[in-house]
Length: 313
Image (tube, rainbow, N blue to C red; front, top):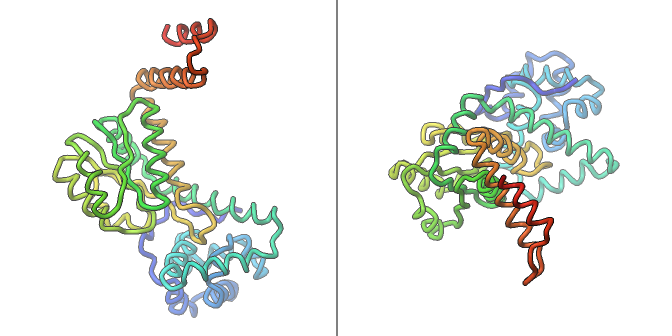
């Protein structure tokens, strides 16, 4: 049975270990066993699904889920994310990596695949529950109406920004990746114009560039769209639209995973707004690619010329 719960509600779940101490007396015997394991081995528990933790303790996955609910969480995924956020503040990255390697070292390659794919599945399903349909539709309208879409991300999130910009260009929408940090980022903000859209990716970190970018966007009449997880509440009143995606609890899957999938959905929906432009841009892209495949100085083959004529017909 899946341990994914519907309609997660806790955005600021607090200190997991403190919550266990406060509520331990009210748990059943089976739930107490689960809670005590989490309190004693938080880094190990963080890397397990409800099924895996249940197997370690000789309990069912539903016992693990009920324990999470008794502690005030919507389910095991929410508890794990809260625990991951807590440990990120108190445990160094090197120690977290060491724990991941220690916990998984006896697993077969097949089991490692299962562990990572299970976290990916959990994050994507949770992210789908997070994304409100009306908010998603608002994001589609913002992208479709923008003069130019400026996509910005820091570190690994820059990959999401570049991915969005490329995907939108291939649908016939003017888009660029905003680059740089510190003073260099100011050059990117000079490109903002009224009627544009600034899309920022901040799944797990706050940074001053984000604050400055949103202030400048508001001053210029530029719309704003933010992809984030735990900083949703921080920015929800300062941007036009927020797409919330679940971060990794145990660091087993990439930071960009749910954002990239959300981008795919967004670009697909945007393509339906103006399908003629999307199709015309796709044909133009394929024509350019064929030209790039030809040897320098070579003339068009009869077949290539006919293909191009068919595409424009």
